[in-house]
Length: 451
Image (cartoon, rainbow, N blue to C red; front, side, top):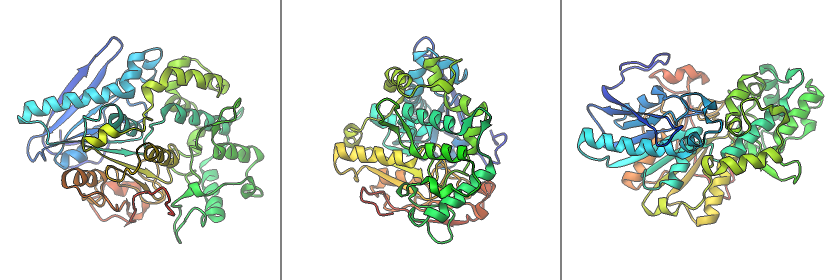
């Protein structure tokens, strides 16, 4: 293999590809790929996470680590038949939630030993979004699998996050269809930056905020802006976050961060029909059926049913990481502050809950917030620290996985990182072997962080 169709990737190292299919029970169909560098193996193994509803293995995300010398593996998480293959099928729930990643890990290590004659000296996992769920699930359920785990924008509180998706979708879609356009998004971001930027720690000249969670958006900010009452009502519902209509208890923090409305997967994306429903409601169809009308979703009755059926399979919310810590494991979480589809506040919540459970976690668990980064990459601020695009320097300051590797192998914990923005803020410049636009230094999040 010397190229990846549709993606400008060059100079893919020569490697052996091994395809594996696992069917641990009826209804299960897990596909796995393992890539083994023929020369210059660095002695380590890297498991790669998937995204969304998975269903396919993405060669593009395996190329970068292969170039760094890792033996690499990934899985389709058992949903190659389509996301709706999980309807009434608990085997898929198990596979998607945790089993496929664990089986991928076991298979990859065995294949590595057969090919190279030794087990990997160190094993790492790098996953973003759904891959972040896989990452935290591994640390919680299978602490012996990996020495170092990197979770980017993790979808770990899965069922509640998806309730937030339904909540947002209902807020921006009325009988006549979606309420917002790309132009509306841009206007809303300008209003928020002008009105609240100083409170959200916006730096002079920036089109993003470091800490948008520190602001409270009020309805008055949009009055007289030309937005309709229905649009303003929808925005305020989104900024309020999803709650139980019977108990009044908040179910999940607001999904879309203020200032991220115009990012990819932002406000107008929630108005897309039928794409948004198909892409984000699938785990609920597993329980409620393929023909369920989500306009009638009940955030008390239906939410209870979802929790009862799916939480044990899909959520990676356990906070006791003692077993992972005690075997020497290191956990790194990185989340963008302009992520419009998984709020970085949920990562803060998990970090705080682990600290509350375990006390000081600095020796094995660190979290960084990437200012202005969108969902796992891109956005109006810094744009890469997780993937290592061609324009991103391949060192432990600029690439999360290498910072993690240094932490595990040399005992040097990351005290700062330098995410980069692409030249001219153009995503296509990510694929050029040229200089990046700029970098920003970021530090580990602290509970009393002032920004």
